[in-house]
Image (tube, rainbow, N blue to C red; front, side):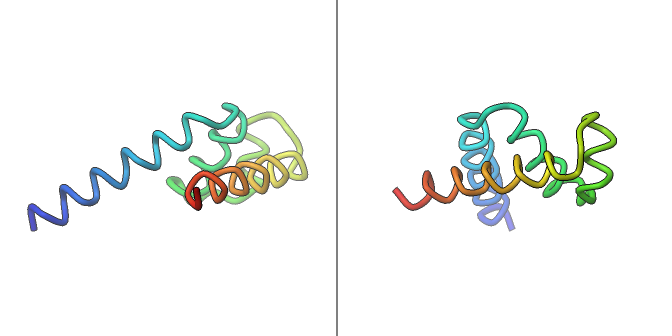
Length: 71
């Protein structure tokens, strides 16, 4: 429905706005993991880093997003 499309767009814009507040390396990993459903191993290949680095960026980024959402 049109109403659910508007809601989805608003939600997308809200999430995009929250991601914009994160360091780009963290936001990039979160986007790749959630939008593209890539594995941490694949994201490490794409970003030229280790899987451990990708996982820590994801964890820290998600932690920051949680704090933003809960305030």
